[in-house]
Length: 166
Image (cartoon, rainbow, N blue to C red; front, top):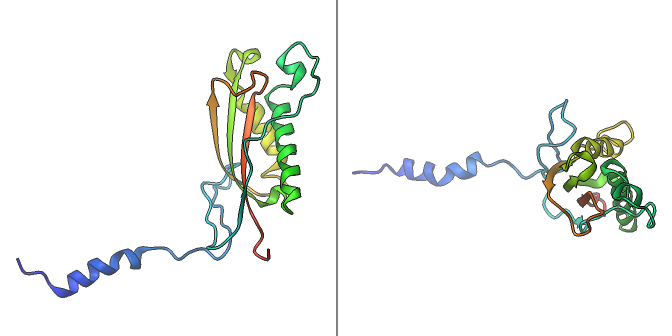
């Protein structure tokens, strides 16, 4: 079988010809009606900051139930996002710099033993994809049986990109 040299050249160059150019700015593609991004494209050499899993602050350490001690999933989500905001501020970042969230939502005994995704989505909507902060982060939300503390209904990891001028 004789192989044409042009075919070999085309075969070798095809991946280069089909590859997309690296982005020059942060891009988070999203459908207009979706509250989250489909993914994140970051320019080369863009510095990132990743938070550890962040949990809510207690409301009342003497409370008799999870909801009295830490609140429901919505309240815990708001608290965890506030904690993330404070950690980011120490780095000179804001919630507008967040490009990705990984969220673990634990089963809530007061919600028939199921994760309260609606409560989390409400908390998310107060911080992202709104008039104050139009950022639609890429996001994974996972329902889990439990977190390290039985009082926690949510744990959030945030990934933020430093602005280009830093």
